[in-house]
Amino acid sequence: MDKAHVTSRQLPSRAKPRAGWQTANHQANVARVVALLQAQEERPIRLSELCRNAGISERTLRSIFKKVFGMGPNRYLHIRRLHLVRAALSIASANTESVSDIALRFGFSDSGRMASDYHALFGEYPSQTLMRMLP
Image 1 (cartoon, rainbow, N blue to C red):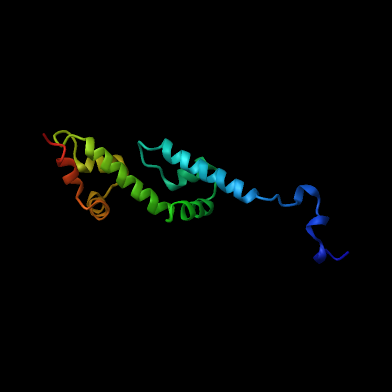
Image 2: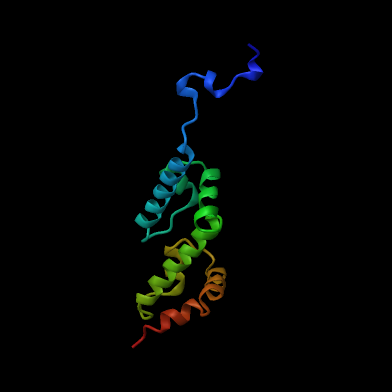
């Protein structure tokens, strides 16, 4: 028999594709990624760390983020970090903490760029969020 005409019925049973395996595997990957994100709500998580801890490739991670969140993982993680900064600023004391210190805590080394992105997302500057907490 010519090798070019081998069908799946002629393959050994272990080599046959299982119905729905990609869907189940995809759902398991999504569940792992979401669980890792929820477990790391107190600190920023890097893309490489997310891939390593979820046990998936960066390509698979990008596919998951596009399907589940409608954006790439870097964009999602950046927005997530901005939300973490906002939450920290909303409970911080302007007398003891600065926007720069809080930005650094969440992985923003350029506080000016962070402030610009923050303003674009939330419609106010980080300093305004921090000052709202003054008595």
